Image (tube, rainbow, N blue to C red):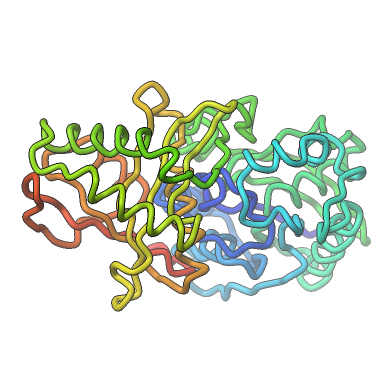
Length: 383
């Protein structure tokens, strides 16, 4: 009998930014890094004969953490352990998908055998390729113990088929949750599903308030290009509020200059000025400057605003996710922005997302931090 620990990857960008990841190669987040450390401790004294992961970055980053206490192992990759390919949904937002594909969105979560979108992978095809990959691992390590890192939908598919329960009856497993399988004579048996007992306060569901609603549909915004000059008053109001929060007053604020600059960027590329809607209500906006920082391979966030009564609901992270998506497509490897040194709330928000202070500068309204976040797609290894 071969034992297989089938592990979901750590929290990745799509989980944080509320974007379907599918086979998009997302990095793990700061929380994801802490989760991998907890996972490593869980497996510290468990004998492993082999370590495998899908060939995507987020699973390799998760699997690599187990090498801390198993340095004699080599991490191998297997494409068949990948997440379902969600086709035309890749790297969009759950808010957009819920608006444009409401029925398919529901089917994806509750009855994926009936789910079909352009370019999307067939549900049974996911089951067959993951099952075959697991059986191949069992055959390669007879009587051994294998850790294999895969993805939420793929693992949920395995659990549904092996238990005979409907997909809707199988809850999502948390990030780095461990499912235990036994394989013997070409037969897979599920003995434990989605155990996240090692996570404690590091649970993604607990951190993001997703317990019982892992897709977080009620808090998924819809990004829409902002129309200027028609929405100039709204833009100026948000910029002024941001300035006042950073500097205490509006000294040095030049609304016409900023509005003219934003209008030029939006005309050149609508993605550079996006508002976020939730239930058709304006909740925030993000303005990108693709020229500033270009020579250093960075993209620039000129403005990010979330309405005060909509904060602490992940909308800010979704706006940053839009910036990450856009700048990656432009070939940038980092995102930069300025934050007033007196704006502790904003500094904490950006640091939680992975930004760090790169330098200090004197701004128009006072001293500022230059903050940067690395967005290069790469495997992260536990120190």
